Amino acid sequence: MAIRKKAASPATPATASAADAPAVATATTAAAGRKTAAKKAAARRPVQRAEPQPDATAIQRGARQSPYKMRLVIDQIRGKNVNEALGLLKFSKKHAAKQIEKTLNSAVANAEYAARQANESLDVDMLFVKHAIVNEGPKIKRFMPAAQGRATPIQKRTSHVHIVVGAKEGK
Image (cartoon, rainbow, N blue to C red; front, side):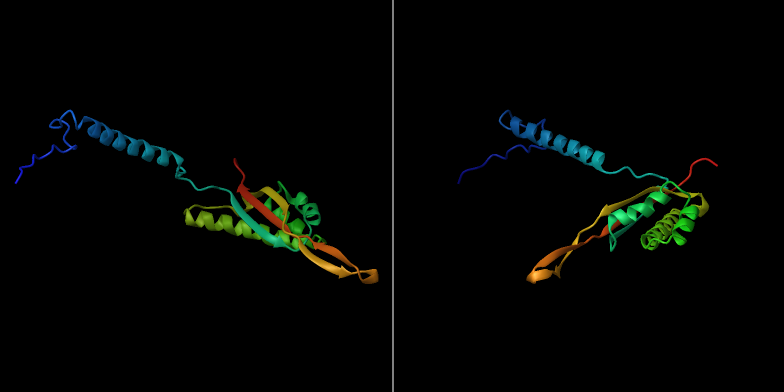
């Protein structure tokens, strides 16, 4: 029966022999690599801010109206006070005004909710339409019968409405 020698552990570099030196070096390098990887991951994480974002967003997707018609209305309210914008939308004859009014009301409600969650006060009269755009949504494709047994394609366009409201600074 042979007696085996107990090998020095790589955790204690003072007792490690010359043959164990590369193993100790790789263990130390791996630990340092983990530290730098953790630092890099921490740098990628978003910074938590103490104050909440004053902007509130509302998005309506797939509104059944063409973006061109919706943009005619949304251009009227961009940059205006929320109360003034709601007044314009309320009395507009355009059908798109109803859809945009719903989205704007949702953005204001989102701002109130965010302020309530942050335990802050929010004056709704100080909100204004900071960003308002209408993008094109997916087209609904249909066919309509035409003369001599043909079929003509019909594209029913949809829109995505994106409204951001923010509080005015100053005052």
